Amino acid sequence: MLWLKNGYNGAYLSMMTVLTHRELNYFKVWHNSSPMKSGAWRTQLIKFVGTFFHMFLFNPETIE
Image 1 (cartoon, one colour):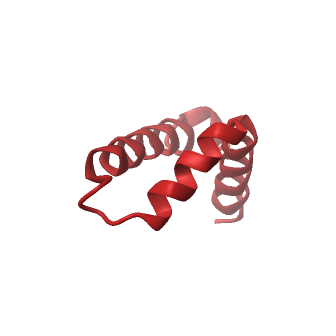
Image 2: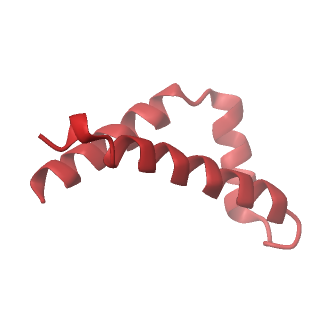
């Protein structure tokens, strides 16, 4: 499972690098606010991250 760990870390780091300062501030606000205030935003983020990792991790080319 080493490839999975390295692939996950690499994808996470590259995704975080792509985020701009403004988006990181949004993330801080989302992280610190209550689920009721940011429920829709949180759902969108989970969907995006889930889709991103699903495409990355279950792509046959990455499982070699």
